[in-house]
Amino acid sequence: MNQIIRMRIAQLALIAAGAFAVASATAAEVIVVEPSAPPPAVRYEAVPAARAGYVWDKGHWRWDHGQYVWVTGHWQVERVGYHWVPGHWIQHGPNWRWVEGHWAA
Image (tube, rainbow, N blue to C red; front, side):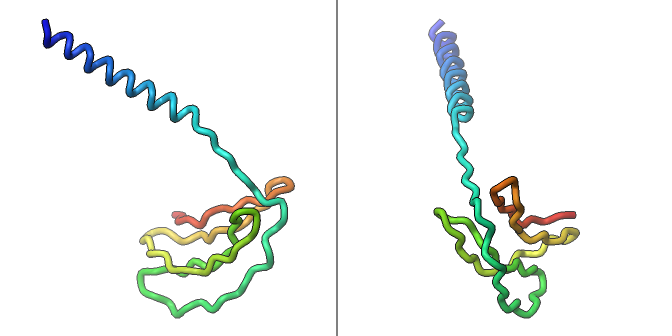
């Protein structure tokens, strides 16, 4: 009898923990801040000599705490069968939105 009660308590604890996890995940709030001013003109930086197994990801402007900040270019490890699509800014209504660089087939 004691063992059955312990099993029921353990089951209820797992159910309660699962319900709490779902409730906290659905209560999360996401805030997106988009700049209304276009990014500054592109900065041209010297592209280093090619490296085997890597692709150069050019520098770009990043929106940070209410202003644009320049992020220098860097190397991305190459993925065989994919090509690198650099990140870029797109206008979305009156605002601007950053599209992260990514690998595409």
